[in-house]
Image (tube, rainbow, N blue to C red; front, side, top):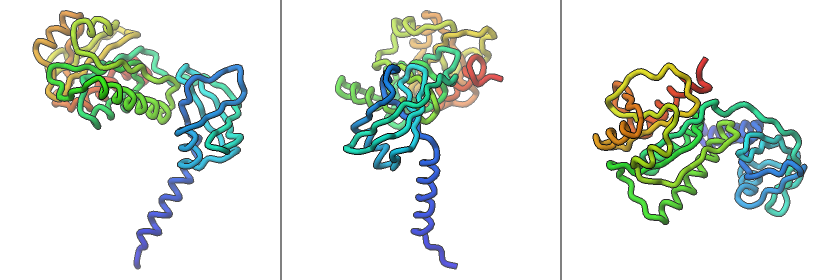
Length: 264
């Protein structure tokens, strides 16, 4: 029996398209005016909806603006590179974590940092603070920082759309890991993850938590002492050495399980 690879590929492509179209797509659209029953979308988002997803008049979408609620909407018109949507139903789903979770993340190289942005959003982080620590390899000038912020923010939006979140995590402009930074973002429970330290978590139920994750080369002893002096608890990240993009996934998952919305 001879298999036609092109035929199989085309069939799978069509199946993927059908499944994608059946699933109601979620979109972040900025501020939505509650007093209006219609919303117009133009530009890249309109192009993506009409040309990539091939949605048409009569199809439904889910919209959210990052404030908490989401709206079920119906496409009324797709002409002239714009979408005219009718806002049908407003709901306020409970998908945000009950804890305020801040991630102070040492900046890593391109795809690794992108993964941190994506997965931390999916895991319910509230705020992300990218920092330059002593062993940070990545160097940025002001122009590159601005481009990176825009790039990372797009990842946060995309991850929020995909994961069903109704709020976009706050993204702080990259800063140096210094005492002032640690004190500014200190919480009820502030954890500095390292290869050594405590191996058990606080039994109390904090509402605000800060987790600090190091770069590829790890933290220095001076940075560890700086965190201790700022009131942070040094916590062992586990028996194995984790990559800088794996460590925040581990930390956020544990924190959400112990104190957030992944617990029983």
